[in-house]
Length: 306
Length: 296
Image (tube, rainbow over all chains, first blue to last red; front, top):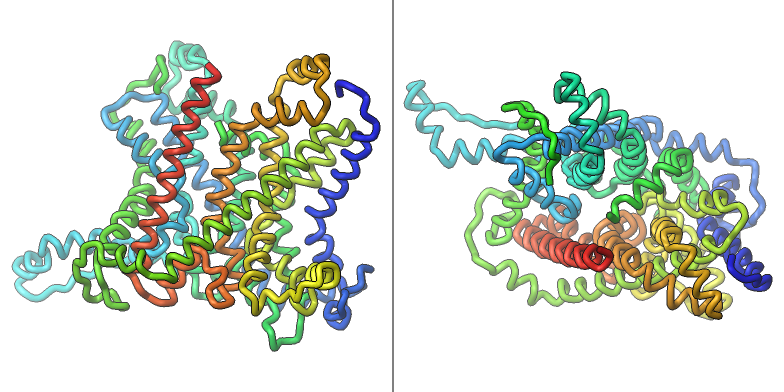
């Protein structure tokens, strides 16, 4: 610091402590609640000393909330989105930055246009699309009256229905959320900062495009990939509206959605200890990812501003 | 922009961009087009018959008092969320930037709520603010003498969803503000100190102006967050109630489309939301360009 301000310095730490407590309070309180029996949780005010029922509540939450299967679904969805986004966007950015071809600008602009549109604003049509992926083909079929043509060729009535539903499937949970341009844009920005000489040298040594990608571009992108892994994993794990719409089968339910069923309703016994125990389990994986990969995560998040 | 040194291949670049283009077309352009078409159609709930009705859906939408109040509520909600989370985030970041010891630990303690799902934040705060069991609601009742009941009173419910949504966003803002503050050259601050500017003066005349691009970016991101991603908060806490008091736009799209099965109304609402977010994006890029020119 520039000058000595002992009072202000003390205040700084006091305020920081207060800030940390305010930010952490909901979790601390939930942890305490998750260790108490139901009689204590429903007492007003709830005792602030942890009880010994933690494992009992966790077990009950695990069974009532069907957490085993839900967590697995969330894990598959979050990893699918993460890997899908990174692979798709890295290849796309490579194509846009390192090749020149006729539709390059068109491709870039059309992908770039989707940059900020979250799935929330186009839920209904995207849902219809997922309900029948062949909807556009079917529409085309009907538009061209190919039914009549098919009937004429075959000599008898043929009804063609093209249907491929993504409802209640992992593909349906993952694919629509992979459609985002943020990662492509980030990789593009990063590739543009890579010195030209690297590519020239690689070409001079006779490396093909894919060799350059594998041996040079990929290793150089490792920190960016790590940052995106954190951001996209958290994003995927925490999805709410899309999995709510697309899954009706309890076997396909994700962990965050499943929590809704554990919240005690007005007339139920107030099993808040169980609901909060489940909430703690479900929030743990993304928190661990953020904490363990904090350095990359902060870097990656801030890069998005540029 | 493109590299000077490039590879040449007839098919490879198309193959590389193909997955991205296919996914974007299927899950973005086609649905967006469908949405646009449905927004000018009147369909029955089973989607069997539809009729072209020009802008009737939009006219119905903007003359519907429920939709208009929903717009006002959404604006109030998102500005409140942005104001609370930005001011707290900025305050904590300023303090953390002043701290000399245990910087990494402090950051760790403040960063993790970013990873908490909005829906889970909703559950945590639902318990804290529960009219009969919640400890925060007890404090509100005792200290402020307010008869807190978010289940019955709309304004309380609104305050409740604002708290739950803003809490999660504090850490996001904190990360950006700390990064922004670290990018401010130390020499500027030292020069101001030599000229006799105290810590508060330096904060207002150096830190805040130099932080303004970050502040602008964070504001945009917070508004987008509170417009769209807070769906989980609303769904777990209030389901838009009581009496529609927390029925923000994104929740209304869901309610009208998936519960009310009113395809036309839901699609025209989607179109309104899409135009809104495109507007925000365009404004943001305009501003970013200006910022670049200013620096260069």
